Image (cartoon, each protein chain N blue to C red):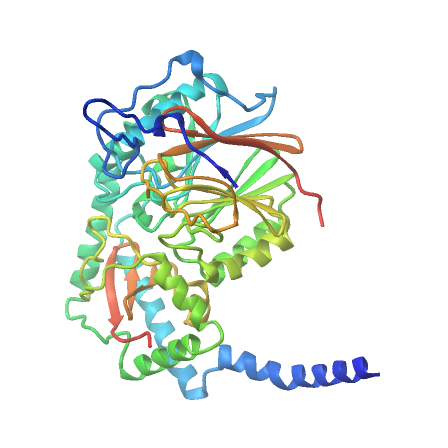
Length: 191
Length: 304
């Protein structure tokens, strides 16, 4: 009888607590936040569409490393020229920055926060942190990159192929992987 | 736990001067170690007719003496084992990624194997230049950061653990679900379990991958990142190996109090040889001096 009662209490607690736990892990964005995130996604897609139109040819597997380097450099030159006035905040404008910081703060202060922090600390301390918009990604001499924890990637808006998030210190950068270029970055993104 | 020590790690005392020699110290990038004569190859794989054989390297791409020593031993063992291909646990090229770097850190050390038609299948580490290496033909990545390939009874799932997106996880789930291979083997760069001190395990990655590995019957997993060798005790029924010292080394970097390891080696570089024949997997791990530092036989796990 006592066991049955504790099971019932346990079930009631689970029903009451589970949604709270889920909310704490990934609170759904409000309508206005969702609008901001949709805008960010549209901008990212537009960026990649434009880049595809600028690419002279697509990288294909080859033994010729010099050719791959040249292709990437030509693409970067073309993109840099096409957005010569690009500046920090073009993608992470005030509203977008606020929503991203909130998403990351919720995540880091949520139940997975400690694991994510541990993953970041373990992965590669000392990853590059000096990002400059529209310039080559700061990994030219093979500096190690920080892996982005899968839970963080689940929480942030999905990016089109060719764009990736990168974390260095508490900065979140937007990395154009085809051109190996910094598209934008958000200082103090991580709490 | 069995403590593995190669012959060359014997402390040599020379009188009247006392010299302590530890081959394999970080920074020991001098002339290649003297190899044992050809007849001293210690092959512990059964070399069964029709079996699948391959080699495993990780964190190799330094271009320095130890990487070349390991490559030389791989070539020597190839003459007897005739492995078909090499899997790479990531950090394939350290430092710059110019054409000369690819020559120094890959093409020259492994030239004898490449000349014999041995294929290399790379995964990406955090020191790798993803865009260039994905498209570098000798790495057989087909322009992809993650991919699969089949060999006889085995399907290999090569993952990008630098950037494990929901899309990649979903792709992996689909691939595992539809795989009919007898053996499912995954490899990538970041360790899910390790006793090494420098980075430690990636818990977040483990939380994402283990449910898929257990649900869809992954049999064995390889990774690197830590510059040591570890054979872990099976975790949730899955065999785990860490091979991250085929060029780099973090000397004495394994927690001695950690009880996850079945065997480990952190005093010199190494590579692995693996053979699968039916329901059995055989392996041996060889140091850069040619000494066998671990070996064994593992059975295909019963399907859940």
